[in-house]
Image (tube, rainbow, N blue to C red; front, top):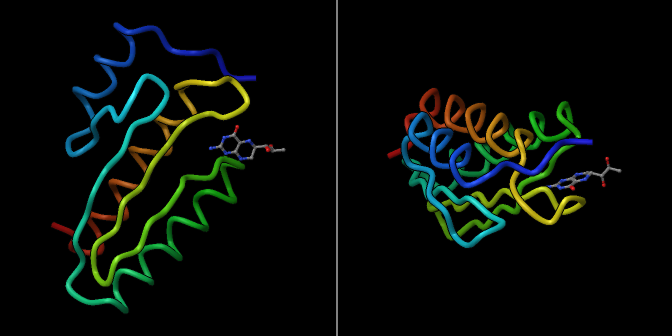
Length: 100
Ligand SMILES: C[C@H](O)[C@H](O)[C@H]1CNC2=NC(N)=NC(=O)C2=N1
């Protein structure tokens, strides 16, 4: 069971996660644009692999080549290290896939 992060810990984690922002108390989000629809879908596939490995699953919104990733730990009703850890891994995929 992951512990809920406090406000200071969330702010500190977001400092190290460029592109991620608070959506509300319980969620962080990142928007990304890929060069094409196919590359956006391939990116979603990579993130799905990470999510299955972590047993932690982001909400993913696909609009043509624009993606939105939304993270929250539903079982805790807020943000935990599971979210910030997966956010960092998603960012690595986005860098590798050439997201802007
Ligand atoms: C049983 C399983 O471990 C849980 O349902 C996991 C799966 N993926 C999850 N994903 C997210 N984002 N939050 C959760 O609380 C969560 N719980």
